[in-house]
Image (cartoon, rainbow, N blue to C red):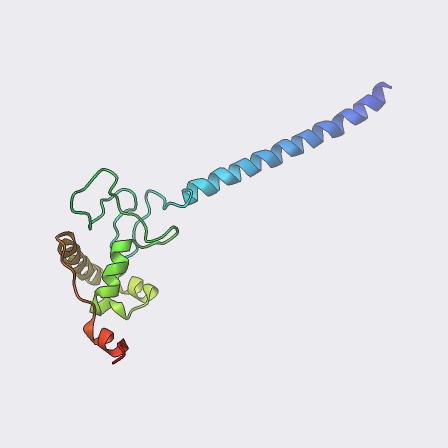
Length: 146
Protein backbone atom coordinates (compact mmCIF):
# COMPACT_ATOMS: atom_id res chain seq x y z
CA UNK A 1 0.00 0.00 0.00
CA UNK A 2 2.80 2.35 0.89
CA UNK A 3 4.64 1.60 -2.38
CA UNK A 4 1.52 2.24 -4.41
CA UNK A 5 0.93 5.65 -2.82
CA UNK A 6 4.58 6.59 -3.51
CA UNK A 7 4.18 5.77 -7.20
CA UNK A 8 1.12 7.99 -7.56
CA UNK A 9 2.64 10.80 -5.52
CA UNK A 10 5.65 11.46 -7.82
CA UNK A 11 3.72 11.76 -11.09
CA UNK A 12 1.34 14.25 -9.49
CA UNK A 13 4.30 16.34 -8.25
CA UNK A 14 5.85 16.25 -11.72
CA UNK A 15 2.55 17.23 -13.28
CA UNK A 16 2.19 20.19 -10.89
CA UNK A 17 5.80 21.19 -11.53
CA UNK A 18 5.28 21.18 -15.31
CA UNK A 19 2.11 23.26 -14.94
CA UNK A 20 3.96 25.74 -12.73
CA UNK A 21 6.90 26.05 -15.13
CA UNK A 22 4.65 26.52 -18.16
CA UNK A 23 2.57 29.16 -16.36
CA UNK A 24 5.73 30.96 -15.23
CA UNK A 25 7.21 30.91 -18.72
CA UNK A 26 3.94 32.24 -20.14
CA UNK A 27 3.94 35.11 -17.64
CA UNK A 28 7.59 35.88 -18.33
CA UNK A 29 6.93 35.92 -22.08
CA UNK A 30 4.03 38.36 -21.63
CA UNK A 31 6.12 40.61 -19.40
CA UNK A 32 8.95 40.63 -21.92
CA UNK A 33 6.56 41.29 -24.79
CA UNK A 34 4.81 44.23 -23.07
CA UNK A 35 8.10 45.68 -21.85
CA UNK A 36 9.57 45.65 -25.35
CA UNK A 37 6.44 46.79 -27.15
CA UNK A 38 5.24 49.18 -24.45
CA UNK A 39 1.57 48.25 -25.06
CA UNK A 40 1.57 50.02 -28.43
CA UNK A 41 4.00 52.77 -27.50
CA UNK A 42 7.61 53.04 -28.51
CA UNK A 43 10.24 52.18 -25.95
CA UNK A 44 11.44 55.24 -24.03
CA UNK A 45 14.97 55.11 -25.44
CA UNK A 46 13.76 54.65 -29.04
CA UNK A 47 14.36 57.57 -31.37
CA UNK A 48 13.12 58.76 -34.74
CA UNK A 49 15.29 57.25 -37.46
CA UNK A 50 15.48 60.58 -39.31
CA UNK A 51 15.71 63.45 -36.78
CA UNK A 52 17.16 61.28 -33.97
CA UNK A 53 14.84 62.86 -31.36
CA UNK A 54 13.75 60.40 -28.66
CA UNK A 55 10.11 59.32 -28.43
CA UNK A 56 8.24 60.19 -25.21
CA UNK A 57 11.34 62.03 -23.90
CA UNK A 58 12.12 64.98 -26.20
CA UNK A 59 9.57 67.73 -26.74
CA UNK A 60 7.49 67.90 -29.91
CA UNK A 61 9.17 70.50 -32.15
CA UNK A 62 5.85 71.62 -33.68
CA UNK A 63 4.11 72.64 -30.45
CA UNK A 64 4.28 76.38 -29.73
CA UNK A 65 3.17 76.52 -26.07
CA UNK A 66 4.69 73.40 -24.55
CA UNK A 67 3.01 71.39 -21.84
CA UNK A 68 4.64 68.58 -19.88
CA UNK A 69 2.72 66.04 -22.00
CA UNK A 70 3.85 67.52 -25.32
CA UNK A 71 6.51 64.93 -26.05
CA UNK A 72 7.46 63.57 -29.43
CA UNK A 73 5.40 60.56 -30.41
CA UNK A 74 5.87 58.06 -33.23
CA UNK A 75 4.00 58.63 -36.49
CA UNK A 76 1.83 55.60 -35.70
CA UNK A 77 1.89 52.72 -33.23
CA UNK A 78 4.98 50.77 -34.34
CA UNK A 79 6.61 53.41 -36.53
CA UNK A 80 10.29 54.28 -36.24
CA UNK A 81 9.75 57.85 -37.44
CA UNK A 82 7.84 60.80 -35.97
CA UNK A 83 4.91 62.73 -37.43
CA UNK A 84 6.92 65.96 -37.91
CA UNK A 85 9.55 64.09 -39.95
CA UNK A 86 6.89 62.38 -42.05
CA UNK A 87 5.34 65.75 -42.95
CA UNK A 88 8.73 67.40 -43.47
CA UNK A 89 9.94 64.67 -45.82
CA UNK A 90 6.69 64.77 -47.79
CA UNK A 91 6.96 68.54 -48.29
CA UNK A 92 10.72 68.92 -48.82
CA UNK A 93 11.70 68.67 -52.49
CA UNK A 94 15.08 67.10 -51.79
CA UNK A 95 13.67 64.19 -49.76
CA UNK A 96 10.17 63.74 -51.23
CA UNK A 97 11.21 61.28 -53.93
CA UNK A 98 13.38 59.10 -51.65
CA UNK A 99 12.11 55.93 -50.06
CA UNK A 100 12.40 55.62 -46.28
CA UNK A 101 15.24 53.12 -46.50
CA UNK A 102 17.12 55.22 -49.07
CA UNK A 103 16.74 58.31 -46.89
CA UNK A 104 17.93 56.40 -43.84
CA UNK A 105 21.06 55.30 -45.71
CA UNK A 106 21.55 58.85 -47.01
CA UNK A 107 21.39 60.25 -43.47
CA UNK A 108 24.07 57.89 -42.19
CA UNK A 109 26.59 60.40 -43.52
CA UNK A 110 27.09 63.02 -40.78
CA UNK A 111 27.23 65.92 -43.25
CA UNK A 112 23.88 64.90 -44.77
CA UNK A 113 22.40 64.45 -41.29
CA UNK A 114 23.56 67.93 -40.29
CA UNK A 115 21.93 69.49 -43.39
CA UNK A 116 18.74 67.53 -42.70
CA UNK A 117 18.68 68.70 -39.07
CA UNK A 118 19.13 72.36 -40.07
CA UNK A 119 16.34 72.20 -42.66
CA UNK A 120 14.11 70.29 -40.24
CA UNK A 121 14.61 72.85 -37.46
CA UNK A 122 13.88 75.71 -39.86
CA UNK A 123 10.74 73.98 -41.14
CA UNK A 124 9.54 73.26 -37.58
CA UNK A 125 10.11 76.89 -36.57
CA UNK A 126 7.97 78.17 -39.47
CA UNK A 127 5.26 75.62 -38.67
CA UNK A 128 5.29 76.60 -34.98
CA UNK A 129 4.69 80.21 -35.96
CA UNK A 130 1.73 79.21 -38.14
CA UNK A 131 3.46 79.34 -41.51
CA UNK A 132 2.99 76.60 -44.03
CA UNK A 133 5.49 75.78 -46.72
CA UNK A 134 3.92 74.99 -50.08
CA UNK A 135 4.35 71.49 -51.39
CA UNK A 136 6.52 70.73 -54.35
CA UNK A 137 4.62 72.74 -56.96
CA UNK A 138 6.02 70.82 -59.93
CA UNK A 139 4.61 67.54 -58.64
CA UNK A 140 1.28 69.15 -57.71
CA UNK A 141 0.83 70.70 -61.15
CA UNK A 142 1.69 67.46 -62.92
CA UNK A 143 -0.86 65.46 -60.93
CA UNK A 144 -3.60 68.07 -61.20
CA UNK A 145 -6.32 67.49 -63.79
CA UNK A 146 -6.90 70.50 -66.01
